[in-house]
Length: 82
Image (cartoon, rainbow, N blue to C red; front, side, top):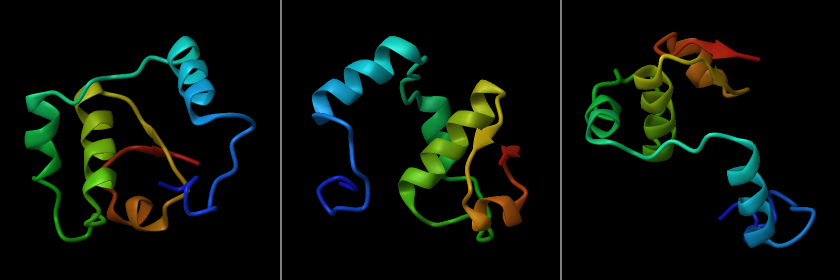
């Protein structure tokens, strides 16, 4: 969506980018635990469903979230880096 809106430029095709990501990173599936955790954030956390799934994935996996999103940082609900 960000590419289609011109907000993110990829160095090639979307398909090529996704293959690169899958080859170089662990891509975690959205589990029932993650989905359940995603609806438990307070109002301080961003309301965007994708932000909530990403934050819930970090919490369930026990990892820090790399983000520059000030609302996520301010909420202090997910450990963050950056």
